[in-house]
Length: 336
Image (cartoon, rainbow, N blue to C red; front, side, top):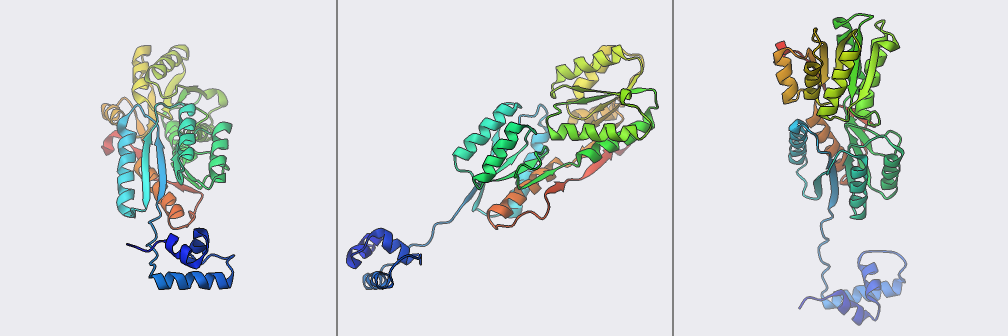
């Protein structure tokens, strides 16, 4: 029968806690007591068990995008990250959220924190509630990496995503070659509280003004990435504004935009620039219904976010940068 700490404690006449402190080299043990414990362990032939492997557990929370394109790219980046890391001590759980609401994300984060997670990868809205929960996580020693959308100055470890202002500025530069003042452009976004949506819009509008377009040349609408809402808002804008000649889809869904153009019955098809080469965007680009797509490397976001979290949790290495930008691309029909 194997000798236990209880046996060593009994022979040395001390508590099991004292034996544990001595065997692990901890302080606050009298030298004579320490020697007595060591002598007892040696005489009994006690062998200290090998230390258990310490695992670090992280979770990536993923919203239910209406287009599975984003999930497929994220999955590709996650699989590549796991192969690259190849460390069984790092356990990453991928948790789908029930819906796109901020409340669903906040509840999921609270659940992970209560479960003792070591790290989190989030796509958050920039709200006081989200900032508070990230700050709370950091205060508990939980490392948080944001992807696609960010909450700056919240205590998060780093952010991985598209250079949103640059992406919006690129779209504006192309748009300024397609229309001229006093023509108007409709800017369709999802939720201006989400940095991934707001940043592109801000970049687009700021750059557009440098080409001589006034503040009245563009109108911003929020469609919460819903097809029917997008369709209705696009149709209303085209019907009510005879000078509207272009649409910038800062977010998905492009299918709702195309449906709204058709629904409006406008005589002249507007110029359309959108983000992300989803299957729908690719089809409309090939058909000539949209002019350009600003592409982003969503798989890079997943890969870099996981790698940054792994290096922090397992190796204790902080990221070299606070923000990691992924690749940008400009796509036209001729490039497909």
